[in-house]
Amino acid sequence: MSGDLLDVNVLLALAWPNHQFHEASRRWFRNRGGRRWLTCSITEIGFVRLSCNPAFSADYKTPREATVLLRIMLDHPDHGFVKDSVSTADETFVSVADNLQGHKQVTDAYLVALAKARGLTLLTFDRKIEAFCPFPDVVEVEALSSQLSALS
Image 1 (cartoon, rainbow, N blue to C red):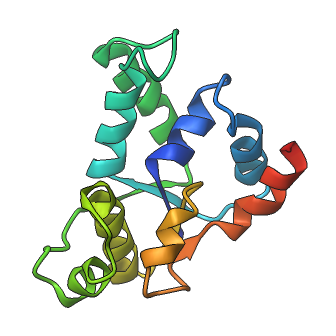
Image 2: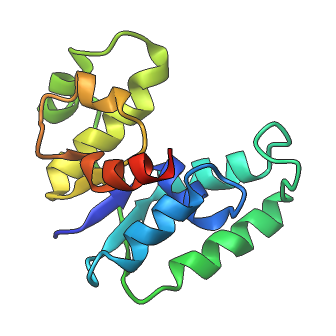
């Protein structure tokens, strides 16, 4: 399998026009050349959870509304779903976890391990992930960085 596993922050940016990286994420989406983009249970749940949080947006959604919004995105023909099948006991996860500094990085570490195990690229706005990722070919922040610079 090949394609981009979208981190929660990229999914949110795509869906929410008031997100600081909305334009950059839309530009990436338009210019991806038909490359598959993927989600997993963790990124989908994160999207729904944050979309329902009033601290995230004054226009927050109910869980039902957030789920409908996500479903509209997932109906795109280039979307795919990745089953969460990496165990925290797997060597791939352990090698990422060895570099973690704290509890807030555990979910990101899992997404890195999942992307590595499936031959995917984790697409994210979170530059901190690169600092603990032992697989430089797995995390892609650069695809968005030139677009982020253009917005500054």
